[in-house]
Length: 115
Image (cartoon, rainbow, N blue to C red):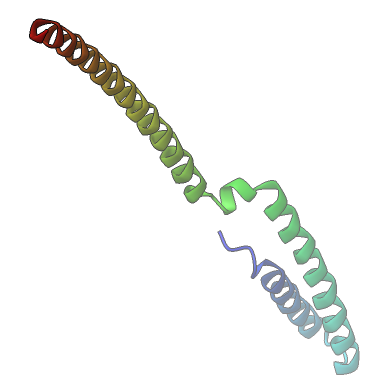
C-alpha cells in the first residue's frame, strides 16, 4: 500500500469541507482564505503524522521482503547441497583408500611371487 498521498488527500478533503462551510456561512473572501490556508496546513501535518505512524506500525504489511525469504531458502538449499557434496567426497575418499590399499597389497603379493 502506498502511503505517500495520505497527507495531501487529507489536506484536500479538509480544504473542500472548509470551502463548503464558508460558502454556506457567506464568509468574506479574506477570512475564507486565512481559514483555508490554516486548515490545509494543520490537516497536512496531521496527515504526515498519520502516514509515519502507519508506516512504522505496519511496515511488514506495507513493505514485504520476498527477496529475504528467497535468499534464506537459497541459503538453506546451498548448505544442504554442500553437506551432500561433503558426504559424497568423504565416501569417495574412503572408496579410493580401500582400492589403494587393495592395490598395494596385490603389488606386495606380486613382488613376493616374483622373488
